Amino acid sequence: MVYPRYFSILDTSKGFDWIVLRAALEKTVPKYGPFTLAQSQDPFSVPRMLQELSRPDGAVNVIARATHRDLEAQFQPIRIPIDRGLMGMRLLLVRKSDMARFASVRTLEDLRHLSAGQGKGWVDTAVLSAAGISVVESPRPGSLFGMLEAGRFDFFPRALDEAPREYDVISKSYPEIVIEPTLMLRYPLPRYFFVRRDTEGARLAERIKAGLEIMLKDGSLVALFHKHKDPLIERAKIGKRRIIELHNPALPPETPLQRSELWFRP
Image 1 (cartoon, rainbow, N blue to C red):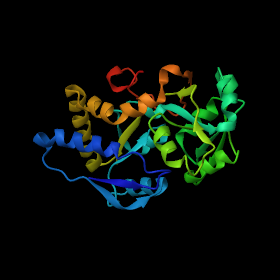
Image 2: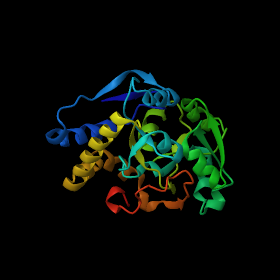
Image 3: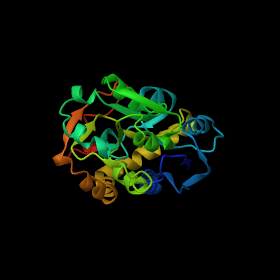
Image 4: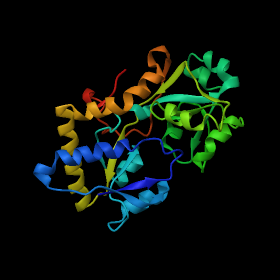
């Protein structure tokens, strides 16, 4: 199996998706046999990555993405959230000078007076827009930190496990940006593995799902989550935050929200 090397905002994930995938494949060796797992030689933008996945002879045959209706229509999702739903828990990167403004936000109506920054085509744009929040998009996600500091928009929502990692990297280059300490946005946004909708994809999906289900039953999926995510969750101090719930209009109806064992519930 080959997964993509990303053109990402910042390479801070430590490869958690692929640690989980490798563990799932290892769990299934007795039934499905040996495997190889490697990263693509070249980095891909998101459009190029999806193009490569769609081709039987493409450079990758598995990706990990936040789900939405169009993506699930094009590719086969394995509907077990890799990150137990952390992608839908959003901390806000803001300017230091705006801390008091955000400290006074109590409701979604309050938040609607502020604008958000997003990468072009990100699924979060649909969530924020549906909530009545003005969104400024950039085709170059790496420019969003500079745009925030320059006042082009008011907050940059990042996943609970992304915000602290990224802040550690960008704080010296963008000293006016901080993680807002009183708020968290929350909406259902599972991150899945995706494969092609063809015979090979069906075979891969069957094996990945089988491995993840084994990991759920033996506790190893949750153990990996705690090992890699607990320090970031502790830094977020969720218990001290006001949580604003948002609706995700792009969430497919097949999302397994009823399977409580799949989701992190602070």
